[in-house]
Length: 446
Image (cartoon, rainbow, N blue to C red):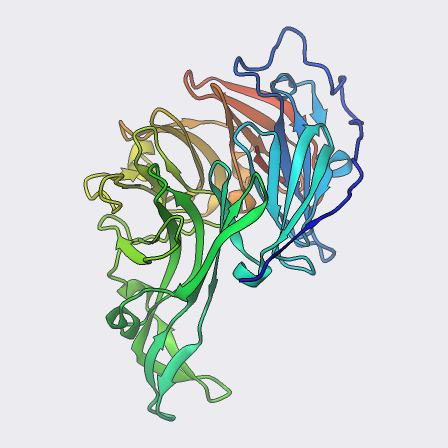
């Protein structure tokens, strides 16, 4: 496959924060950074496009210290003072574990499919590394991608095939709809593609004939042994027996989501070869696991992979490190853990020692936070001041550093707060004030 890497000379953008209640470069009174010495937490926010569509106009970033994060008197206007990450639409941002680097593959537009790396210097100072990598030939101009392990980026895309049929009206016969999977392995340190591949999505002919197809793949994660990649799948089903014709005389087969019998599906490929594609199926859930903008599967401290059925499910499933298959004995149900009905996980972050944080809504409404104990299968809801107005649909990442989890909360177009959660004690600090702007919201921390 063809790719190109180009070195660009980019001027440093150095600025100072305005409209703040304190000096942005100095810590608040009586507070220090966490013991592990992490210097910055980057916050990101999306802005609307020219037509006013929320989240489609690009992304701003701003780096603050832990002291600023927990200071309620610190105020940040990221929309006027943030650094514009390159992307025609909302950037799909990833970061190094220590927060010193941000990575992005531009999504759509003239430079869709171009990888950029930024060095985090503090405040609005993000130094463009000058290293670009065009991966559009391998995974398209609108790729899904994540940091699947430290220094390892995995980009994926699915080219949805057309419905294959036989016969003529009014007796068309449905055959199958088969997508093509594309994968690229990107080394984040040296900014280079190490491998890429393309293959037909590996549903069996029997499942294809029953009307199953996949419209999207996303959130790849590398297992503990670093020999398998697990990729979430958006599975759909039509009913081959329910045929009608549209106004143009074209055959249309009815959706058959209710007739789905197969469980949650994960695509597995070998690493680093990206070969030997196979599918594994959960027996405990039928909800899709492809997420939307946020990583939703992680390697736990025990070596197993914990996978949320996001962005519409209530389940956290486990892929066994020994079998590389779903663990039929493990099932975390957020409804049961919180004693609610119709919780829908929209973002999930594994923290440490079996503890995770989830952002969720209930029946598609509101925005809520919970700490989850994946070993005990319990959850603790953490109240926030913006529950009724939050929408986590654009949310991308939750930063973790030491004992702290950083969750920016802003209803679209409104001001909010950076919630800093001690995941060990469950104490919550309503920290830095985050100003609002019409059609905009904060979408992550890194």
